Length: 346
Image (cartoon, rainbow, N blue to C red; front, top):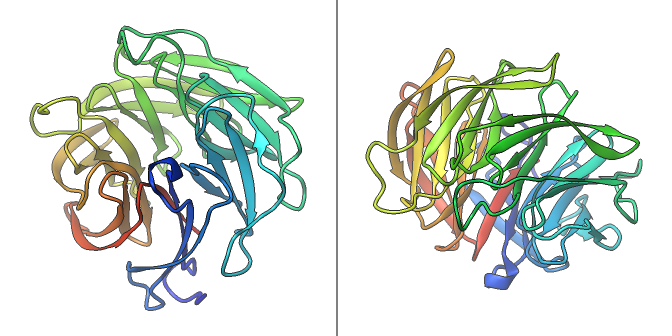
């Protein structure tokens, strides 16, 4: 594939739900002229429901969770046109892994169904060890009688300093800050958010001192101050992601911070919109919302100044140019991917 363009990264990988008719793991390439357009390539069916993906720092290995009741994580070699499964998928000892991240020589998975975080060692060649090295079981519940009867880990990622890993739990209305000890996730601190907010995903500001948590059970973003030295997250304020009251449950999903730190974007599934918030010091200001170009925007990504949206129910990936002054996205194109769940670049 061509390595032209502003970042030199002209590949994309798209996850989808095979149980809903998706093709599995789909490869794509970006236009060599530096534009946003995607051209679809091969589809790989080796892992059911690869709902979230993460790329190694050297760009040679792609990791995917299998969001099934059994729950596994898999590694793929991506040197050629078709990703090749690098060993059998590894059970995560948890159900419904919905997200994963790389941290301290391990792949960590956020297991939504069982409310836990699993660590699987990564070998020097990028392949995965045969079994997990440790698991952290979340505990607790929230006031929502249907969605918060127990813990539901929804995201796990390293902080910008690389000292900590944070896990966001929709069921317990909290964010956990952890480290690894002998390959096992160990809780350092749990930070409570507003009861009933249902935190889903967290994104860090480029300054390394702020973080934004998009809440699924209420259409808001919680602005937090992040202290990497102490591994501490402090909630500051909560801001709506919609200009008016939603018609029903809004189900916000993805959140992205602009590389220059000026804007925060969220996807809102119940309203099929992308929201734009301007960063204002320790706060956010809602600028507006635009259509996502599809139905049920499950995930959101930024690449080379463009926004990409995986629309699960309409079965497509849409992309948008961004107005530099206002941060408002402008629809620019799409490709069909049934039951699309996420998109990563590298």
